[in-house]
Amino acid sequence: MASVEMETCPASAPFFGFMGVTSALVFANIGAAYGTAKSGVGISSMGVMNPGLVMRNIIPVVMAGVLGIYGLIVAVIIQGSITEPSGGMAVYSLYSGFAHLAAGLCCGLSGLAAGMAIGIVGDAGVRAVGQQEKLFVGMILILIFAEALGLYGLIVALILSQNSYECSNNN
Image (cartoon, rainbow, N blue to C red; front, side, top):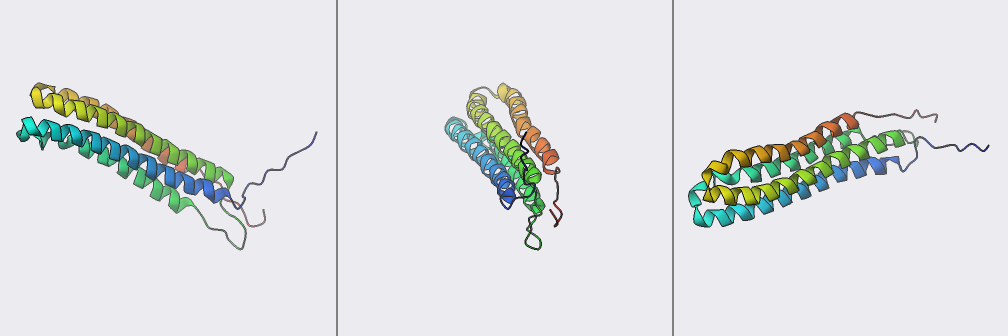
């Protein structure tokens, strides 16, 4: 039986960590942008008929913007964990790279999903509140559950980002 030796700390390992940084920030910001744009369209449409409710119904836009902050937090934490080579030898391991990639994808894709949910609910919700103000509390509750999806991704990403293995120089 042939044994296959796997390199623990190849020079390409930081690529996966940096992809985690990119994934966290880009996907979370896409979700935030979509949620902001979709909710903003609903607010603009509702504001034509009931301009007094525009500031009250700005909540979906704020909630969507928070998703981008989640991605920024995770990206900064992961980036701070990526170590440069020392003495010509890689110190950053594949294990760390894969853990940081998983953290970035977890936060980014959760933020993307939450942003889509906030955008759709925000658009329909503010239009409905413009016609019947009693629907405001229901809209806020649905938005809270949509935002929670992004928060779950942030929490799991923070846990994943703490997983690391550092190679010694004699590896």
